[in-house]
Length: 383
Image 1 (cartoon, rainbow, N blue to C red):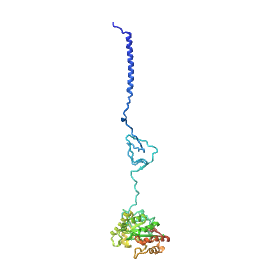
Image 2 (cartoon, one colour; image 1 turned 60 degrees about the vertical axis):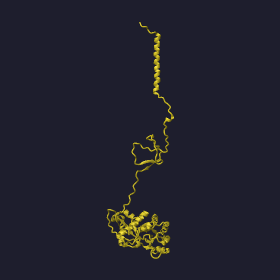
Image 3 (cartoon, rainbow, N blue to C red; image 1 turned 90 degrees about the vertical axis):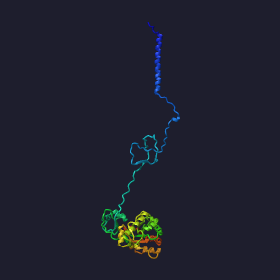
């Protein structure tokens, strides 16, 4: 029979099995927890990535990446024009509630106001009748009431007897006859005189005349030739800048009676162009014939070009015959006509005459003492 194991050996076997089981559990717990908890090793300082430091002086603008570009860009008033944006910056950044109001930058500027329609074909002279208004005149002349008012420098509805130039608009017809017209004076309703100075050969006295007018706040009408304007651009600009009225006296001061229609038109157009180029102003609607020389043909050609022919009530004679003294000019201009005929008078003198410039302060002061006011031609004609 086989030999039975001894009790002592059996006990040792059991104890060995128990010890092995306990040791296995201990090892499992130890190595299992180590697998779930990674070991943290200290890396060298040269391999550590440093976060960039952001120092903002203004809050960046938020523009979502999937949003369409706006037609109006909002730019905060205290923000620099170009702001760098870090690549790791979040897409959305909260905007502070106390952010200054933005400035609107429109993508297009506003359109200018609609301009008064410009005449494109033809003009006619017309004298206002008792029952007429700008509306009825515009209907007859194929024009526009506001255009007639602006073109003729009116300050309100024209009074009966006021001569006008009526521009005819493209596409319209006119029933006006354009009779030859020549203005020699204004209405005598007010103690006003129109002092008009023609540009002669000289220009040196003009600065003193302008100074006398400027210190008294008086505006008058200058009839300038294109040749004079181009020879004296600074004076021409000063006349316009001082607020005086400028009218057409032709380009070269010829006797228009000996010119054909086309040459008359050229004389007017070149003088007007000279003023526009030099002083950015026009010469319409007044014209004075050189030497005071005219006939019916000349008047009608001039009117068809948009000009109202102007003559004078009193010639100072400062350019006629022997040179005149300042005392002579003072007496002739202020005392030749009686007061009832001086009202509304158009006075002729020349801005290139030295004694006219010498007498100008006394002339202006004498009129003021007499209770008369010196005005532009358009103001006197408006009555």
